[in-house]
Image (tube, rainbow, N blue to C red; front, top):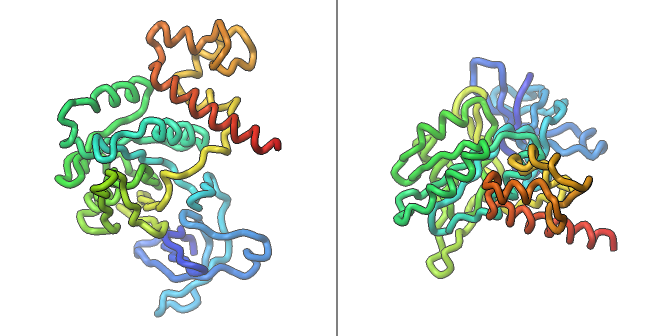
Length: 298
């Protein structure tokens, strides 16, 4: 049988049968040889499995297909789109985190979709500028008001035929959006701390929720805290999409675009072709990666 792992608790896996008219989900264990080979199945893995008890819906995983994408933290395989959720307020938009996530999505080779939630709180119309910056460099940006289900249908259309991972700081409304998509409480709602206006993370386990055939949402705890340390600092430029066509204008090979003169990126900023604030965030991310690399040398 062909299946996809949609849930995992300890050594038990929820495997959904695919290429079947029935939406059967089996409770499966992995063959012992996987442990010997130091291979651990994860949510999102496409697998071959054998049914051991059809009435109890029990099975055993026989084979894990080659992964197209693998995230180390949280452990998740084969996602095809990362949905990056911001809120217009409470918490305020974290654009440094967003740019890290966009760079990491480019590094992984998966599609990105930006969702700005809680639009009803944007009384000063500040989100318009943020939206224009990211749309100008080619990203899709959707505005939502999850508690009123505004923008949900547009979002659902963009999720189609993807395994989608929702990412963003706690409190931005990821769970409310997911519940709105399914029109029922799929994930536990979080709450905003009134004292510090930061979110409290309430999701505790990775799980894939099926919207319809070939379309899933991964609810992933801690995804906003992922590290982008896999990206070498000297390659970060390749994952800021608007930089790519300007790098060839740099005078020096290996230009870091930080201290060098006659830099194609800096010239593009002067001409208004690259947003200066996004460039500043590039510099911060570059320095973070560089400092980590220096520490690892010692």
